[in-house]
Image (cartoon, rainbow, N blue to C red):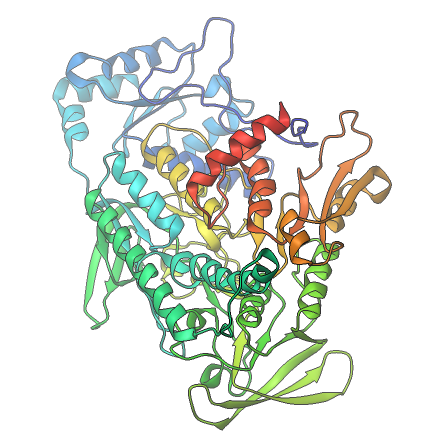
Length: 628
């Protein structure tokens, strides 16, 4: 593989003109690098963004000096804070070094009514210029401001105890900050709730992968006879045994998260968080008791919950992925509504353990993924007994019989005409998408903007919302990938930027992922449809092949099913890959892990989830052999 090419129009990463804790001066004749690349104040929106970033700098830094590298008065002010009796970390920001320095100085003057530099803030208090800062030092006021205790209960409160929120909270605590995590699971319409850890651990990646493994073992039993295994009894799956074992494992993970928070002195409160005013949040526990807390900064990591259809009987009788993995009885004959990866993964493992499964699809399979690959996944599922009802949507769910499971009648209509149909099932599983949990946490009271249609939160490139002290990570972010490793990485890097003098940002581009359908699908980068949209079809070359995994040969499985595809820009002399490895369908976890780990470890240092960490080291070594 060649190195990933720089994207057209991409702006290279730039570092601060100075590093916190080190006076920021530029060598004679050399300009320090700008901190706000690409910002100009030619529009009201850009001006507001600049103002927000400046206020964020003042909020985030104990001492904030806005200055020019050639100003002797600025040098004198810096020396105050480097005396042995008053050494503090300083974040110096030099207007001289900016492409839009005049705009920054103009916005600063609006904030402070001061047009000269240096412009000094201490613990968010505007000190003024050089003379006033010296006077404050001589009177002892400066020392008092620096020694002043925080006006807040916590340095950071994280709302949401999922993967991203916990990663951020623990990293901030490691960096010496006082941190609280608020986490509360509102029960599903069927009454299901769970412990600390968020969607991935409790009702997502972990139980999904374990149930997928249960289905794979069923296939392995069938294959084993060809490998010499002899057994007389007919294999039978027990749903209750599987769910009990999986829930026991999840319970151990919930406990380990609580222990980890306690070890790092992170306060964990099992209450529902809601903003009541700036820097203040109300926490309501299961008994309805309310407690208020304040913090200097907040991180929203509330995630998403499954969407319902809004039809008669959906919340009364249907279940979602929130309920499936702890369902106390076997779901029996199941209708899966939706064509998302959640829908197809659940349909796949339910069929894999021997259940009668039908998937009702409104439009296309795996929207947003490569459609050729999506159709191959669907075709394989149909060949292995899963029925698909295309171009239909449910309009009513009616209970015919009570029971565990009972019987439900589903009435559906065609999306292409007046045709209707009915079917009877034991369980109806809705997997039609997810909604962000942002509308009932008081964001409107502090002015945090959300996308009114989706509930997603727009953020800048450092996960900061339009309110400077409020940040967000994970599935609530607008336009970002909804993947556990991404949320963990973003959470850690956010904490390091806020509290640890780091500058690294989370890279949301070309992140590999795997869909655990019966024919597993691993991909990274652009789908073929998106590549055509970006680069035009005539500029692309697509390399593809069918292959036959060794494990399938003796078992006698189809030799024309597994498929790999790479999409390339043919005008790139080194045949660089537009999206690295794109759209690799593989049946076996081992192969799937190899191909996707090659990309994630060689280029992006992002883990694939859920999988065993020790595999990453093995695959990385293998990768070195392949590429060198």
